[in-house]
Amino acid sequence: MKKLIAPEILSKEVVAKSRLFQIESLDLKFSNGEERTYERMKPSGRSAVMIVPVTESGDLLLVREYAAGTERYELGFPKGLVDLGETALEAANRELKEEIGFGANQLTPLKEVVLAPSYFSSKMTLFVAQDLYPEKLEGDEPEPLELVRWPVAQAEELITHVDFGEARSITALMLALKYLEAR
Image 1 (cartoon, rainbow, N blue to C red):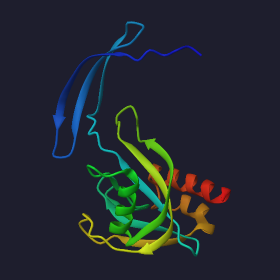
Image 2: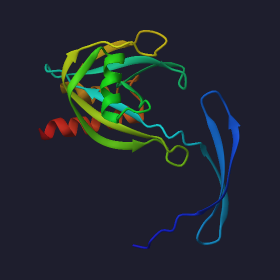
Image 3: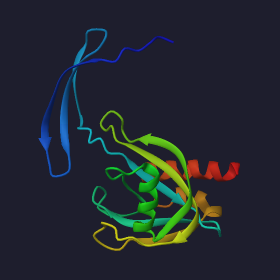
Image 4: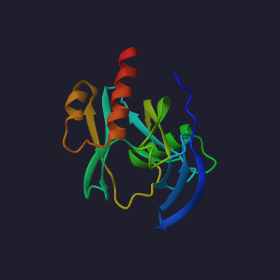
């Protein structure tokens, strides 16, 4: 296989900015001499976590929350940013407590994923959480999240559920099912 040579970054410039996001323009020169301008979300340096909680009785715990991007309520797994000074494992347990009112004695990392790598650099670590115990922390959500229990045995139906469409949640579910099946 031919060794790929990353393009040279000729310049970087923030071309748009909001309260939450910065769009960066990159002028690139590829190894074959081609030059192109790409745009991306400026890297924030923060990563995120998503957790697939599984109860002793074999239920998945999901949350239904409003998503401004789709302008509707979406069903998915607990998730959030890793705070400064926090490990992904610590963030996963904190997010569980904030979003569903449970902590986990066993958190197993499944995979680190990137959403749309042409535009974003942020990484998200996917976990499966087991041996859950009740513990609630105050979160930053604007309204209480609806907790939804879904039997692992009916996971195939969840995949086709109209409200369960986030690619990262589907990926997390598939990896969690593979993990659970192997155990």
